[in-house]
Image 1 (cartoon, helix red, strand yellow):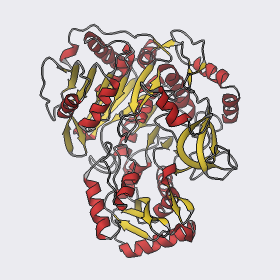
Image 2 (image 1 turned 60 degrees about the vertical axis):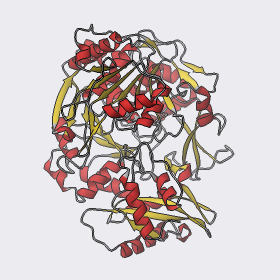
Image 3 (image 1 turned 120 degrees about the horizontal axis):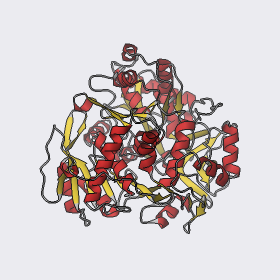
Image 4 (image 1 turned 180 degrees about the vertical axis):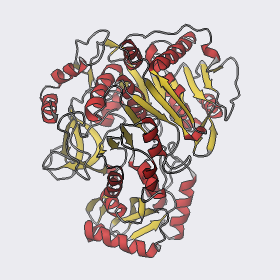
Amino acid sequence: MGYNEDYKASIENPEAFWAEQADNIAWYKKPENILEKTEHGSYKWYADGELNTCYLALDYHVENGRGDQVALYYDSPAADGIKEAITYNDLLARVSRFAGALKAQGVGKGDRVVIYMPMIPEAAVAMLACARLGAPHSVVFGGFAPNELAIRIDDATPKVIITASCGIEFDKKIAYKPLVDKAIELSTNKPDHTIVVQRPMIKAEMTAPRDLDWNACQEGVEPAGCTPVKGEDPLYVLYTSGTTGQPKGIQRDNGGNAVALNYALKNIYGMQPGDVWWAASDVGWVVGHSLIVYGPLMGGCSAIFFEGKPIRNPDAGTFWRIIEEYGVNSMFCAPTAYRAVRKEDPTGGLSKKYDLSSLRCVFVAGEKLDSSTYTWLSELLEVPVLDHWWQTETGWPMTAPLMGLPDPSDVRLGSTNKPVPGYDIRVVDGEGNEVEANETGNIVVKLPMPPGVAWTIWKSPERFTSSYLSTFEGYYHTGDGGFKDDDGYVFITGRTDDVINVSGHRLSTGEMEEVVSAHPAVAECAVIGVPDSLKGELPLGLILLKAGEDIAEEQLEKELVQMVRDQVGALACFRKAVVVQRLPKTRSGKILRAILRKIVANEEYKMPSTIDDESILGEITDQLDQRGMIK
């Protein structure tokens, strides 16, 4: 079927549609209860089915003759260019053996395991080993401060923590073991053991009997088989980034996740068994769970496991080198990474050194895809550049073109495309009433949500209800604002708190960023609202220039003010633009706009646990203070 048929079927009779999709994965016992409403108002899928996610990702393919195919290509420019091609046979052996080691330490079905690791193959092995045992894992991004890790340890109450001796951030090596030790010291819950992968760059000090060596603890153990779990049983708990106070553990179930990712990989991303897929992200984020480990492996693909940055080791041609070397067919990345590449190599000349003919399309998400970056990337690669939209809570895309179907939606610049089958996306006003096409409002999804979407918070189902289901009755509240056009394309204007109020006019900073980023000298920008006694708020542009640009700041500001005036209107009152050396971001590449707003408002802020480099905030503060921008 095509998109229109799939979408209509999924909305008119979701239970029948997703029952049919469930037939495409290998259950131990097929579910009879396809859809159930929980007592807290959410919906869960395939609750009574029995399966094992690790079986679907590894054993199934080995049993069906795909054992000699590469499952993971490990490529680490950060670690002196280490490379490894791991077949499905090899990965299954590693996972079975490590699952046996976990089992020997008392980890079983339902026990939690915290994984605090860099992008090394052992991270994937650890995740899959937990899934094999039916033990929910909670991956915490490597490098989180001890206090943040301790909060997550106390919430997840893991039996074991798995870590490595160090991670690598650009040219800096970060010792992980002392951070884990401090977190355990701070936490109320004390895990039984810490299992440590010793990397050659830094050797961790070990404390017996709590600390166990990754290799030594596997000696002589019996490889573990797959433990059947229910469809509703949790596969993992992933804490939302930037959490303050009690963390919000997004709980993903085994059954819904397997069906959703199987559907997404084939129909959204157009991937088939044997294809090479690359999601340039980290296992600490939802993209890493869905599109580095579980999705590609359940789909029988070869996935790239990349440890590094796009503009280093040795230069901004790293992405293009990997595409050629491994024959990447399709990839996923945040726009911020391409903006970083463009800043270092504005003409894209480095791409000409490589054969990129294997590449079929590029997917982007996580940040707004501005027209300037879109045009640069699509002209450079000469393949479709496809924006789409999803959240940690959903686990897979809400809007996207379906490249695996015969009639994928066309690209519409500024839009993240049409709703994916299963997502009945509406736009409502503050009272919950649907608005007309092209009218901006709150983006919501009519219940029930499709399989794969979280339906509870770990240990706190009532918090899921209050966070997502209580604002607009009968709908999941995405927290994003935007509109749908006459043809049903969805346009995300930003988080609802990224709208500024200028003299009573509610204006999207994302719209202004779109205009500013189109300037030929601008590599990247952030537009934030600055408090103003007369107008309420005024926009301020923080500008990162492309490499080699030497335009005077006064001239750039003048040109940007005119561009915004011409394309947004005088009511935007865009009058100030400051050139900065760097913009503060999370480790997943999202600009920390909320912190920037607090800086210019001279308000206290807590250092974000997800920040990539804390020193940037001091730089920004000094620059804005010198310009008299801080209130």
